[in-house]
Every structure is written in C-alpha cells, then in structure tokens.
Image (cartoon, rainbow, N blue to C red; front, side, top):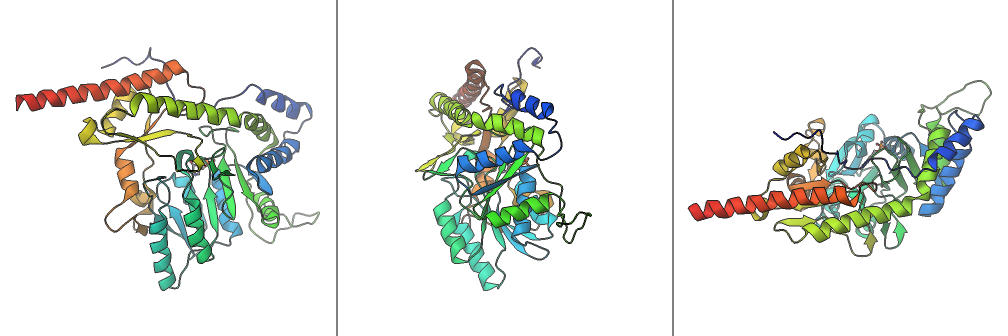
Length: 397
Ligand SMILES: *Cc1c(COP(=O)(O)O)cnc(C)c1O
C-alpha cells in the first residue's frame, strides 16, 4: 500500500484566482452593495455579453438555474418533450424534470463527442411521425468542444424547434470564429468552482432576444409584478447572482483569455508526451473550432495498451492524482431508467464507448509543469509495465 500523504494532491480542475477579485469584493463591501443585485451584477452581465457577442446576458445563481429559466421561457411544461445530449453532466437534463417534461436522450458522434446530427435527425423523424415534436433541444459542448452546430441548427430550424446551448464547459471556445454558447435561442454558462472561470457558484443566461431576458430577470427575482405591495401572478424563482459574487466574476473574466491559453498548453503537453503510446486517442478538435480544452480527455484502447481505464484511475488515485472517467451517459443513469435514447446508429452507441474507455486528466490552469509531469510519468509507467507484462505472458505461452 502506497503512502499518499506526502504526495501533493493534484486536482482535476481547481479554482484559479487572479488576485484582482479582492478589489471588486472590497469595493462591494465599502459601498455596502452586499444585497443581491448591484453595480457588479449589471457590469458583469454587460461584460459577458460583450465578450461573447450576445445582445443580453442575465447573471444567475448557477448554470442549472440558467437552463431552468431557458426552458421556462420556452414554455416547457408537463407532458412536453425535450431532446438533450446524453453524454453530459446530470445538470443539463434535471431542469427538464423540474418542469414535468420528458427528456429524450441523443447520442454523441466520434468527431466532437457531442450530439450526433444523424441520431438527432432520426429522433426528429420519429417525433414528427408521432405528431409530438420536442419543445426544445439542449445541445452540450463537452469539455470545451463545440458540437457540430451547423448540422444541428439545420435540423432544428427545419422543424422550427429552438436550441438551448449548454456551454457550461465551453466559455472561451469558438466555432467558426463565433463564441460557443451564442448559436441557439439561449446559451448558458456556469461559474461553478471547477469551471474555466468561477464565481464560486454562479451562471449566466445569454440571448439576442432582449425581451426574453427581461422576462428571465423577472422570473429569477420571484416574479414580482410592478406594484408597491408584493403582488405575484406567476411562479418565480430566487435565482439571481449576488453583487459580491459578480465582482469575483468580473475579475475572472479579465483573465479568461489567459486561462484558455493555459488549458490549451496543458492539453498540448499531454498530447506531445502521450499521443504516441499504443491505444491512446485524444478527444479531437473539430476543424474551424477552437476548444478551451477545459479538461483534457482521451480514450484508452484496452487491447492495444493493456490498460483498463478503471485500473488506471485507481493507480492515479494512489498517486494522489484526481482523474475522472468521462461523464456517464444520462440514458444509463438509474434516474433516467426507461427514457428514450437515440444511438448514433442502429448498432453503435458512441457515448457508451466513450464512457467505458474515456478518462479526464488534471487540467487546471494553475497546475504546475512539474505536477503535470507527475501525471504523465504515472500514465507512461502504467502502460509500459502492462505491455512488458503482456509480452512476458505471451513468451511463456
Ligand atoms: C457544470 C455544468 C452544468 C451546471 O452548472 P452549475 O453552475 O454547476 O449549476 C451544466 N451542464 C454542464 C455540461 C456542466 O458541466
């Protein structure tokens, strides 16, 4: 048994402060703008909208809240259907259930690991045949990589169904020069502690539809009618971001460009050091897109490398290195048992393959080169030993 206590822990993706956050926080304290809402919230919204090139942005308490608001604004309700990527974090789909609607999960395709246009097309054909089109499609940009937006937009536009782009992991990424998150009717970002920039917890809803975002702010502040007494005629939420946290977000946004550069450099180092090993394939980057490479993800072919992802994860844990499997597809989650699922093709489920063989490596922008070399060394040694062992086994036979 290895003693891990003296080995410094290497995190998957930990918060990375710039130092300027404290100035915004101090200013909020000095002016006593502690209550939710205030000048930092207004400024953070404008700055994000400017950065990604959207008309409007509404700062909220989490990425999940932003998805919930987007679905509400599209009038998703009990009995409605919503299509959603299967290979994602559960937060992409939970708000569908909050509203009593029914999720339908769509598989990935191999070039982006994101929503498969051909599976989406089949799902639409069947829904159209049944006379029950979805109210919305939630498209996720996994680990910073944009989905095949042109193809997906063409299909959704054909059926006149709006897209919510879950860009929680892809702030700072671009697709054909345009910011990730700006392709659908709504886009959402997350500022949770592990994301590329963070407000400790928080999210943003963006859209070019100024009127809808006005309504989003209304719903996010308990849906108060304009009256001096507290009057309400619709159900609202308490979903706004606080002025203190928005201050953190403003300082973080100032360094987003640097954070993207750092994560891409980390990806490149992993690639240089590991890509030549047998059985290793890195998550691709689609032509004309730039991923923020939020997490470096790769698959390991067991036969070629001699290594099972499960075993490698345990070896990394013993070295006090935090790595993770790729997201467990939502159609495989006990929570969503019995939910309809459209695989990439009749006999090929890409998300299941990625889940079984995929791994995410520590990718924090504050990780040192020395730390990263520890991860790389551990991976190389594991694969080298397995190959030697297998050669030895074969010789004996
Ligand atoms: C993090 C994340 C969310 C949820 O964001 P929160 O701010 O944690 O609520 C949604 N979708 C994806 C793909 C995420 O990674």
